[in-house]
Image 1 (tube, rainbow, N blue to C red):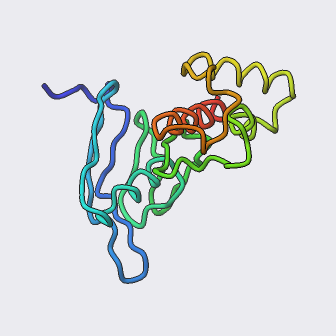
Image 2 (image 1 turned 90 degrees about the vertical axis):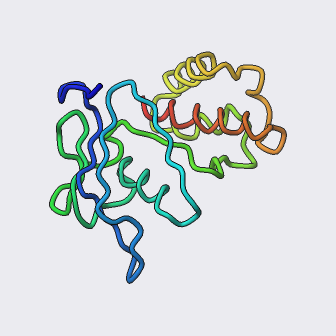
Length: 160
């Protein structure tokens, strides 16, 4: 069943990206409907991370367009900053600070907020993701899945 246009939340139209002479993505088109879950699969170097980085606004498109909820967020002539897109993704290495506890890693992204607001947001995110039992641990003390949940919590906290 094809979703109606109003239900589509992410659209990529003929998106391309090159790095010098290396073509990372060439003419990629994709529509992801609201609530739909997709998986990007492919060999190393085929452009999966580049595509995610462009959707999130961490990288720019060379050609084509990216639309969120019908509004253009990326094209060769338009670029909406990542913080205004409200999209996040977790890198494979999770990017946690090894010398900071779980709580401190989450608070790091909240440092521009008033202290009490940051502490309250951190507590909400920790409770929502279900990692309260990990808050005093350091990344080397966590399993891969726990590190991933902490990285998600850190990005969720900072994005709100």
